[in-house]
Length: 453
Image 1 (tube, rainbow, N blue to C red):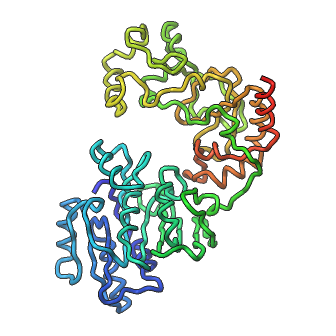
Image 2: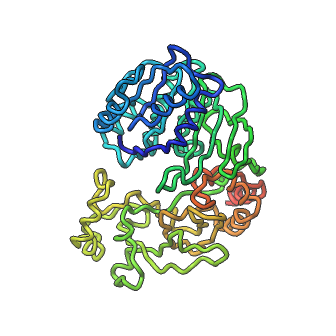
Image 3: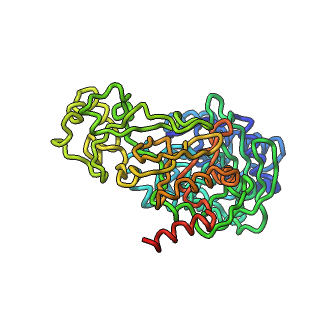
């Protein structure tokens, strides 16, 4: 199974203990490990039953990888009530279960074939946007959970707040999420991950959810209904008052341009001939933005095979840029990108909205310890993918909007709404920025300008 990462025995035992908390298995109970790998969770269940002198349930493990199947069947040969099935958990049709426990595979959309993506989008409500297999495992497992059945999964924490996981949170809003435990970042040896162990009971929610954070805090929260992010209630929400949002005041709130091959499209200004400079723009990456420092001068330029409206230029109009892009080593790199399956070989991974980007705007880093916004007054910078930008509806909003976004209140709001990255850093996202409430006086500036025009 792609995305398979072995689960340490101590974590397995803790999850099995949580699975049977206040509800030990009974004779005739059924338990599922939907991606059993080498059988770690099955062995954990057997250990728990022996230690607690409890009847073992009928255990079903499902695994796609034939080599792991052979190893697991050999290891568990002779164990009664244990069945190992070879197959794709997302497509086979097992019966329902009283208990489900496991570590679903983490496989991003880029690692799936076009056929797999199409099939999963037909089968699953959670197969939306930049899907990951672990979201589909969640949905499939919840469908198979019997009334009052219990499920314990260890997965990336981001399902609690990313836009892609909205359909999953919608489904989970109809279940009792009993506990969310943010496991240590080094849970999986050799990997820096942000795992969450989540316990779910198949009944309508009627009680608060227990949250255990990585710093040892324990609290009870009421998760928001529907598909909204859980981040504000988990982190402790800091609210701002405002009937309008940043999206209402902006022409565009987005991350920077994704070329899919910055090594080829982004070059030091000193390297460029005057002919190449004409089809390029100054560009900045997130690492160049330093807290407490002014907006730096761009030392690199992004070669851009697009006109100022964001339309891809025909090859015959690329001139010197076309000569550069057709160099064998450059063209090979560009043709190796996944986007060329649906776009011309020299196009960017995402079409740059240059008509909106090339305006006065605000810039911020995508990963930062403290969110901060810089003003690009000239509007000539094309930010790279590690920079977010906000284009206000009117240039006279630049300074008041920058003052507001750099206020202590907005920083507190962003800390309670943004997802976490490594070492206490925040990961800024356009979906969060767009929802940032703004004070009425900023909104009034836009309305008064519209009336005067």
